[in-house]
Structures are given as structure tokens and as C-alpha cells.
Length: 466
Image 1 (tube, rainbow, N blue to C red):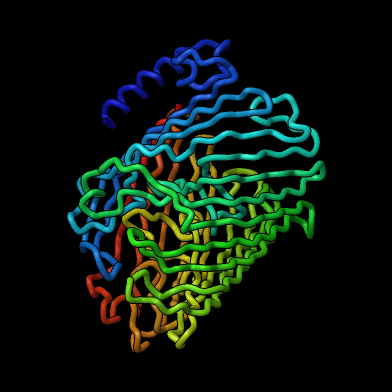
Image 2 (cartoon, rainbow, N blue to C red; image 1 turned 30 degrees about the vertical axis):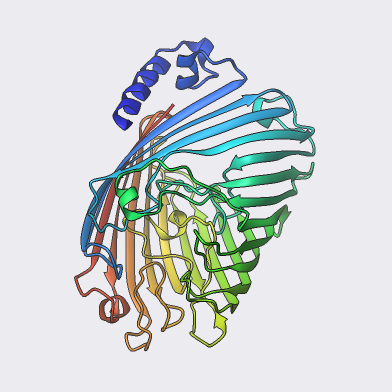
């Protein structure tokens, strides 16, 4: 199926490159299909090869490699104040080991992740798809859709990951004339399927589902031009219940947070500081025998300060700090932070077969350097140290745990480098990256740790955008 998709997309790309100036308003795919101006159609095909050696996880093969493909087609029709949109995403993985860690984050074949109707409110301007708005304006979206909120640490449409989070429900997004933005939503998160290991290995087509037994709702407000940047406040609520064919941790969580940020700009400093507090109840596992509701009290901190130098490659240097609580094991209580539906790549490096760090039981300072040598090329390198916040809890996303605490807190040092290059600007991009996890005592000496040497990982993406 994906070889057919690749051939078709390449043919469309050739047609788009041959198009004349009169067709410049449309992308290559829309041009090739002869779509009217009020119908936007885009597509992308990403091919990724990645491999890992000396596994850091408590489970999974010592070494693994994978070919993953993601084909994405999006269409949106603008009928004035009403828009109709849909998206089909086909995510597949091949050649991984039989006991691979690849799962629903890599495979979700032929899935309609979006199908919505969107209503424009207020002074939306005359630009297509809401562009050119003049005064107070907003959107109400009903149906299936994806979401990015704030710094994308708790609610995000995944970009690096081969599959994405999506939701079914309603979202209202309102921006005042002076730039204050308020978002409110009620949704049922889509449960990605298939989730059985054999079906994932076969790239089985099984439609995702949503259920009233899991609800996610809340609000987010951003206020610009405050203290040299923007302030954001949010309140998020997740409620879920077991049912005979679906096991959950019965999470009933409130997550309250605030964020202050200023975006990078040439010759200026920037910052991004976020704190979140989580409360409510949850069970320690989704096992049927686990019926104990624990009182949740967990926290998250992210802090980043950077400076972008003017001229030349416009290098940006930044200092990073991330911390999230781990569980202490205290009877009747649970302290491990739940990252909800967030994305990890921007803060913690590549995921897929890699991805040891996440916002749970973690203390991690770091340094990052970024540069843009030209319009086609950008570079990035990051170094992070990592400790467990609680010595007795599972460290981050590794599954490694020393319940007695004898292995200490230090998990290791992660080094990462990335190079992205537009082979054909706007059309074909290459993204290459490598990462190394120099294992510390916790990952080496814990009872379920692996004393197999430091972990090495690499990937290469090739993305065709139409």
C-alpha cells in the first residue's frame, strides 16, 4: 500500500513542480487534482529508518531496527463561516524484532484521525481559513480533531512520533482584539488500535475508538505583553472508568498549571518557565485486582533560558531544566506525575525506539546549541544529565526500578545531535539524528537494569510534503 502511495505522491510532486505561476496559490497535490481555491488538500509521506543498540529499557530486545512509514492526507473546505475538514493518517512499521518496543506510538494503519466541522465567529477577516483576522475572532470545532495547547508538554499533536494523539468532542477558541486567547474543550481521547503485539507487528487496520468512560476537558488562557513575554494559565481534567473490555488506572486527575514565555528572536534573550500541579485519585496499575484508589499529589517544572546571537548562523544557546515527581511508595498516596497527552521530542530528544526521558520521576539539567547556517539547513545539539527524583520509583520511561534504592539516583548522561536539510525547499526534507545514553549507576545496577554498555541510537527521516 505504501509503495503505491509513494509512487502517487512522487507523480503529484512532479506535476506540482511543473505548474505555472497562476497555480502558485495551491500546493502540488491540489494543483494536480484541479481543486478549487476554497478546497485545500495537502499530503505528506515520511520514511524513517532508525536503530538502537544496547537497550536501556527493562524489557525489549538488546538491539533493534525499524523502517516506519507515515502517509498523511488532509483536506479542508472553506465555505465562508463554515469549514469542513478531514485527515487520514496511515502509520506502519516494518522489520522490527519480534519482541520490539514498537507499539501504538508507531503503528496506526489507515486511521481517520480528523473529521470535523469548524465555525468561524467574530471578525474573521476576509482571508481564507481565518487568515487576516482584524478584531475579536474565534473558532468552534466539533467532531474528531487534534490539539496543541501551550508548550505542548501536556496536550499535543505529535510530530516526531509516527502516530498522533487525537480527540472527539468540541473545542472553542476565542482571541480578543488585544490578543488574549482562551480555549475551552470537552473531548473523549481516541484510543489507538490495534494494541495487541501480534496485530501491531502485522500493521493490522483497526479503527480507533472513543468512549464516554474516558473524558478529557478543560481550559487554557494566554495573555500577551506581560513581563516581557506571554503568560499562560490552564486547568485540565481527566476522568476514566474501567469497563469489562477496557482496563484503566481509573484516573480522576486535575492538572493546574502556569507558564511564562518569550519566543526566541535575533539579538535577544528568551525564556520558557512552566509549573504544574496534579491532584485527584488514581490506581497504581490497570490490573483487575488493583482496586485501591490512591490520593494523587504530583508536580512538574520546566525552565529554559536562551539567547540568540544576531548575524551569521544566528546561533542560540540555552540552559534547560526539567523535573517531575516520582512515587514514594507511601501507603494510600501516589506522587508520579502523569504527562497526559503531551509530546516529548522538543524537550527530551527522539522517541520511537529511543526516548528514555519523560516527565515522570526525573531531574534533568541540560545545555543546548542551535544554529541556522542557511535557509535550507538547521543544526541542534543537546547534552543532559538525568537523575531519578525518587530513588525507589521507576525511572522516567525506562521501566528500570530499584525499590530498595541501593542503586542510587543517577541514571546517566544523554547526548543528542540533529541535522535537518531541505533538499527541495518546501517539498522534500531530510532529518538525521543521533543520540547516546551514557548509563549511570541506576540504569546499570538496578535489579532489572541492563549492564550491556551505553545505548546508541540513530535515525534518518525523509519527508515529502505536497
